[in-house]
Image (cartoon, rainbow, N blue to C red):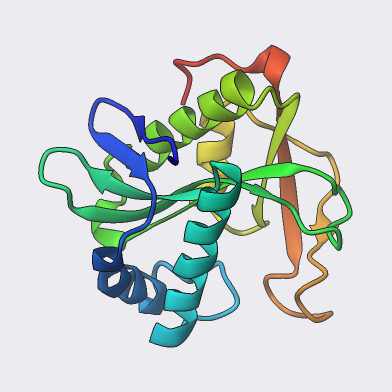
Length: 185
């Protein structure tokens, strides 16, 4: 049974079929996908949700579906993921988030991220969790700072993006378990 993480307002849980339409809409929204290479098709979005569901089923954690507890409204995904070996700082576990535009500016990303960090440090015993994004993604960089993550001094070039791509320069931020403070963010 995959764990369910609950906060005051949110539930981070395994994916359900009912999440797919809202997730596809989120992934097709140019505002949400502005700092990712491109919006996703419905098929790509469904495949991504299936990968998230599989990883949670196999390892007990991953990018969880996030819903508002009050009425069960799907808001997006937040969670932990093992970074690909192609990244210059691998091996590492990253924290990531992607919320529907209607859920922005309400503190949901920070609230869910704190729950995921707590799971990673307390339950998985990780020594460090990283996050990374485009150098220009000020909203995510600000959230990383609020969570207590510290930026590496030098940016890195994301290897999945071609040289010259506007999103290729990325900032890596780190949070050590010793520096983690559960109420911060």
